[in-house]
Image (cartoon, rainbow over all chains, first blue to last red; front, side, top):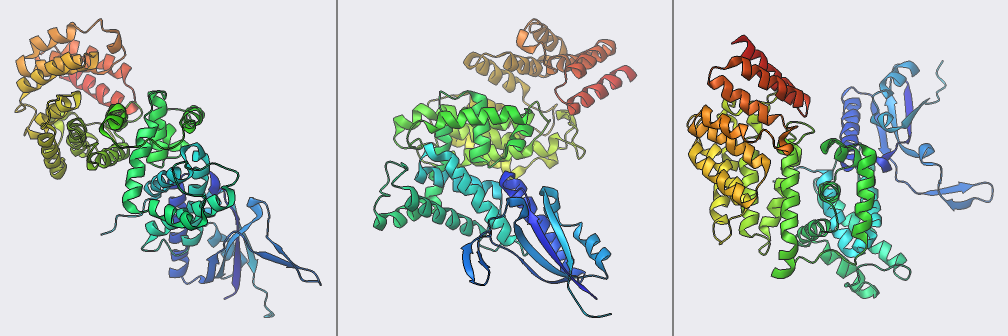
Length: 113
Length: 412
């Protein structure tokens, strides 16, 4: 079965109350657990905020990325699904969608024909 | 066993410790730190769930943030003026000492005393208690207090501004210092509990009662705050909380006292209530909390409405009325008279309150009347009274209850 990368962006966490944050955490854990149980989960982790960016031939290093909060990647998952449509369907369960987050679904490139 | 992780409780604990270290004038900054720590926790734990020592992790994260912040800003900003934070040697040990478990509990008390300041109106105190000591968000406070989010925001903004003026948290030490503010703290907790127990927003908000009970428990653990009044207040909360499970049916509708399944009342809480009531009798003082706890204890001790010591309850209401005259107390006394001395006397007592302006909107006056009319076989008048009660209901659950009593009176 083909693999897909989920890229999670955004999410209005700063405006959530402690209880809402806890609910988000519980929903995420339940969702990821479900993907595991159903055999879709291959790999993945949430990401910390900061980091470094290396650019160009000179390999210049800057702190970052300082994207807008809604564009900042907050985590990724590698999932196995029948096809892009199936992977898209599975992504609808992502709790981040409830708090203004987005999921980008990208097929892992393969040469199989 | 470790208690279940609760972000609300953790946020209140972190905030209290941070406010102690950063100073109450930096409350907004402390709130930012808490939000940031919780967001990072969510991020770190969302795939696999929180670790076993999540609570300790949060406290440590807040502590480290505080140290970083002070190190970065101490030349520009004033933090807690009474702490030695300027020297690099003292900084980390000073701050980490203040993030120890028992220190945090004291900080929660300090925060409670700070919030119940005489220059803050009661609604602001309640909103601030919910926000700072219970970790509620704006939306949750608005829902709990039947207010709009915008109104709550305004209340909190003004309240926080008022709080931010003096230097540090209220120091909970010294009998005189404590005594000056303790009554206001007790009153705020009483209001918080009442809002949960029979507030206007929803018939029963067990969560608010649990918060009031928890905070009052903290007060009762502090040697100088555990006065007879505090113990009586906690006793009262235990007796009422014990009966919460019986008061609301599964579907959220209200259940009348005579129809409650008393086996569902919480025996452990009732025992704790009695134990606290005993301990509260150690002093000279007989406060309104003593009397209200004693009244609640009569209900908890009784096997049924009929076998309740109503004569004693009337006596206690008489005392309460002398101590704190209020139309609501008078109404409850009239209801007790109806049980103790018969429907005729009860109706007379209710009739005497008919012109009371503060009861003009209360659904409970006509409801009590309806009940006594029924006892005397005056079904038509009873139906009219219940109809009036239903019109005055403060929430759908009350309206439904009174309307069903009206229909029953009509039918029978």
